[in-house]
Amino acid sequence: MKLSLKRKEEEVEIEDENGTIKHYFLREMLGEQRDKFLNVVAGRFKYGEDGKAKGRDFTGQYSDLLGFCLYDSVTKTLVPPKVIQTWPASVQKALHRAAEKINGFNEDAEEAAKNESPANG
Image 1 (cartoon, rainbow, N blue to C red):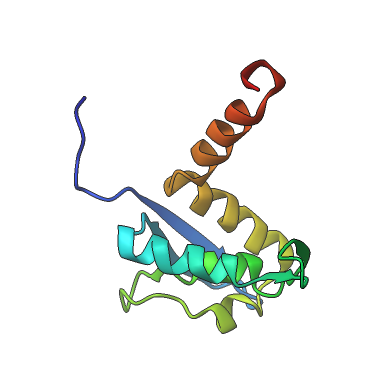
Image 2: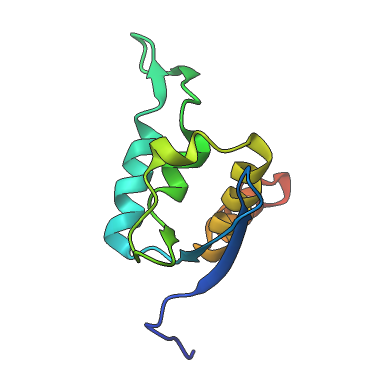
């Protein structure tokens, strides 16, 4: 197995309302960032007295992930989730999908689905 400590990156261009192109980049999270993000996700679930999940709060679902891995190309700083929340849903969705891919979350979901399939149970 050959691995690299160089984080994956993907350039992003977003056209604002005035037609100006702004440059960003998605960068793979470090382990500590990933863990913080997963804690945010876990905090969205609401549990009943029996300990079973009873609901989920979807507020910031896309912007929270992007807030850990979407950088402004000029300032090299993370774009705050509250800024991302002001962008159109289609932009957030496209960026979210790319962020899941660059961070390997799709691979995690595929592996979990394989482990839960009837053939494995």
